[in-house]
Image 1 (tube, one colour):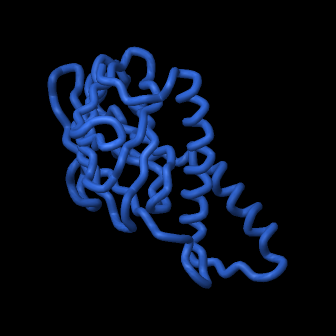
Image 2: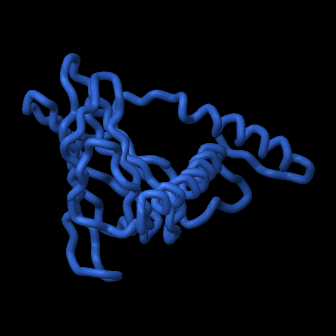
Length: 201
């Protein structure tokens, strides 16, 4: 859907976007996902990885996320209680590049999501595809690496250069607003949890 914002329509658009934004968290998606699904390239933003525990009677005990090239992770929100984080990266300091992140030790029950957050900046305007490996308490492994039409699609996000010209996608606006709100919340979590710098667990 495309929306052309004209004189006098701003307040109505704002109310529509606010209403839809508030409705977003209630939408349940039964697959691994990185959100927001749309963000601005070259801008630091808070992202979330959510991985559902689908197998009955089991828990998720390990999550491995392979980071696509050009998606620069700056820092991490401390993982949920019980989880330990290990970062695989090249370089050091400002030149470090996060390639893979492993979270272990958790026990996410059936029907719930394992949720991890990080501040990152996509370098270019394109689609970024993540590879996610999920290990269950019985040792079985699920790979979220397939195409969008598969039973286990790989999480993707779309980085865009701007909101566009004459028309602005409502879904894009929603995603960006959610991202801004999340960035504020993530900043608070980073401050509350310490200095927010990367740390190898």
